[in-house]
Length: 232
Image (cartoon, rainbow, N blue to C red; front, side, top):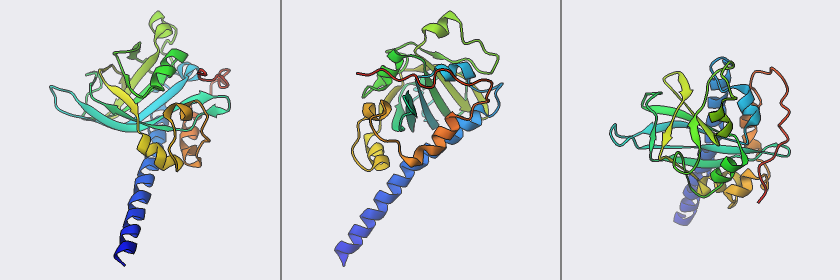
């Protein structure tokens, strides 16, 4: 009897952990949809049409004022031949969010603009601001996405806090995959890079995320949706 109770408790705990990982996908979808619901305040559409990958980390919690440590879990997806890859759960740790946004908890979005940036975020660990051209992104439909800085940037960073949405700097923060949560989502051990390169079948639970990524105000059809992430 005790063994049966233990098995039931273990099964219940695993089920809760899986639902928590899936809930993170829903939260990421909600954050992206809310931020871009107002086209004059969201991420410029032409940037999203160029995006190779997107990482969405809801509710990043800040630590001490002096240290500025932070922690959050979210998801990342990349463009593949048939749309977007399956989501890979990621952790944002350490470093600091630029003072532009303020607030004690922020929703963070990273928009990857080229193959080089995509390859870096497919690594087992990537330091934002330390290993790549990461810069604060422009906001709004009228924002220019053709400046020299944006043309050379690999990754654009944004954050929403207390209703305000702006491009922000991320200094010393690391982004790494959460392999345990990915296993809960896909039902088996899967590789972060394989997920983002479209080698792992997309889970149905990610449908809300794909819907959100496709819900930007439709000024014109993208001509780049079939562009793929680089093959290794």
